[in-house]
Image (tube, rainbow, N blue to C red):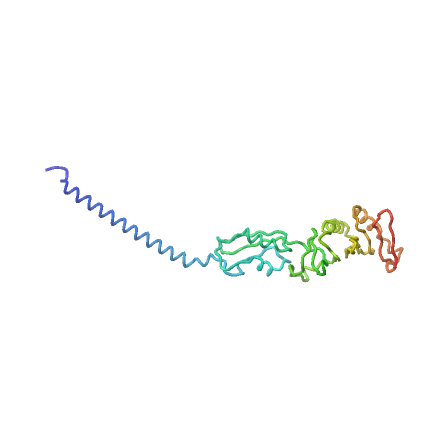
Amino acid sequence: MSAFPPPQLKHKIALVNLHRQRLERISLGRSSLIICSTLSLFLLSTLSYWQVKKQSQIKINGGKLVNKNTIYRTLSFDYPQFIWTIDGKELEKNIKSIPSVAAAKVNRQIIPPQIVISLQEKSPVALASFQGQVGFLDPQGDWISLNFYSNFNNDLRLPKLKVINYQIEYKSTWKKVYSLISRHPKLEVSQVQWNPSGSIFIQTKIGRFLLGSELSQIEQQFQIMSRLKNLPQHHASREIAYIDVSNPEVILIQRY
């Protein structure tokens, strides 16, 4: 008897093996389909979780003075949006367009899904009138409408310094003036006023000073004002209209 099966038997064995392999592939395909369907149903059931659906999912850090409602409006955010489709750079650009914002950083947080905004505000150091409106000035000379700030209360007081008749072209001058005001706190400057000709008047605890419009010697002018701290002892302040230091070499007292 031959040790090898006849050709007919080989053929039948091959057919059985092919049939078994086909059944295995069909079974594997069915299992894969069931697994994929189950996963798809699970993902669909949880898909809404990954959306930013309401304003409370937008967190603002570092904003003490900036009006939060202004930030929410400026974002122009359409609800809902999937957290991974949100363009953080575009949101940063929108926020930076707010006059009271110096810098902004937007981060997308996956778990839980939310937007985290970190703000750097412009510091209002003076109340300022500009083109018939009242707003704030920051140290860099940016004028900001009152509408872009809120939360001034007992903890966050309004600036004591007042600026009258401010104009955008005075920006570089204001930087110098404010820097010197900060360096001479004993003068207790309470007001800076520009007149129509561009000359500057400064109100201090000593009295009112005229600096003029040509400020190449402004540091010397502030030094002179500081040295005149005893002036009220020699002249009644109610008799003095202002002290002219526009020419530091010749100090003039203008009386009423």
